[in-house]
Image (cartoon, rainbow over all chains, first blue to last red; front, top):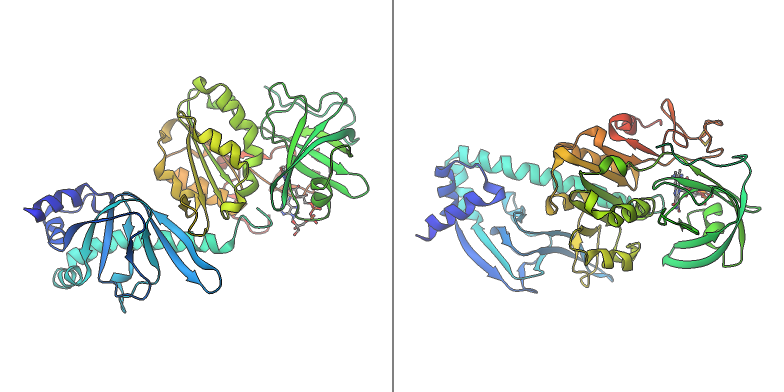
Length: 155
Length: 280
Ligand SMILES: Cc1cc2nc3c(=O)[nH]c(=O)nc-3n(C[C@H](O)[C@H](O)[C@H](O)COP(=O)(O)OP(=O)(O)OC[C@H]3O[C@@H](n4cnc5c(N)ncnc54)[C@H](O)[C@@H]3O)c2cc1C
Ligand code: FES
């Protein structure tokens, strides 16, 4: 019952829009609904990246702590977006902290469960790649622009 | 409508006096000028003046005040070098030379009946502010209006009080993002294009106005185009070093055009390709 409900939520989520219902059911089998309150951490830097999140409500801030500067926020994401990509590639470890800025409702997907399913069904793996790679490229590109400090002296 | 142009000898600066000066950011000041000279106060949103700090030099500075019924000239200046430092440092009572107004304007009239997306980056909010004043003053003539503003950090947010006032306005979609922030900032962090999914507009009937660092405008324009906004409906404000501001000296040449005369405001359809040529 839970899986069925999750499947519906997943197919309505921007990230999994247009995913074949049979594959969606496979993904849903690795998921569960989660909730975080403002100020909670979804995960911390250095911890195993054993799941990722599809946000249904609320915003999450990504932070890194720089010595002598305290935590630095470098990205916020919200409804319809995904939190966590480190689960995809070894060593499956988070590289930053993810903090709830508001009450968060999300679907947490178990990374090992999903990786195993992708290994067994490459079609599912390919569908996931098609969704994650553009996200990764977008974030890489955005990070590059942030690094350029385009608003500096010559902005 | 033709752009207001400099009256009299356009190479001869007219004298104006600073009557107010406000610190906006650590390196950015707004000065208000009064002048008895003819023709300086009639400008259109997006146009600029050549401000002359006596004995130091001249710089192109956009007008950042409201064009309607203006009795003073308002300019926001970031101190980046010799001339801008001298201009930003002018205190009430000080005098300076002004030539202008010059250049093309934001197509506010062409946006009537359309949705309007205003995308500003850093100090780029200053040249857009006159257009925003006009859009908001005649709010009912336009469809949805979205203002997306990106800047470096929370302490670099220009016109913060005005943004707060606009945020309270229910018929303006306003989103602000910064490149990085401390944990005391509860707003968005990320590039300005990441704000696009957060606002509602109909790409097929949208006019977009972009001003900020060129890299930001380039990627902002492409993101809007990807969403379906026509390149001819996307307008950018270009920045090049200037000298005469009259299309004579060639200092501001950009491809076959002069930014001072054909610009600074130009459509992405016209200048998009040129923006990727490194030599320009
Ligand atoms: C149409 C137009 C509108 C402008 N509006 C404003 C405005 O509203 N407020 C404002 O503060 N500035 C504005 N500028 C930019 C302003 O003209 C320059 O910052 C100023 O000329 C710098 O002169 P300076 O002697 O202080 O600096 P310089 O000593 O000449 O330069 C300092 C540093 O800034 C760089 N630089 C100087 N001018 C430019 C430029 N035009 N583009 C890119 N890099 C430059 C130089 O390469 C140098 O590294 C505008 C420019 C144009 C063309
Ligand atoms: S500044 Fe002389 S041609 Fe533009």
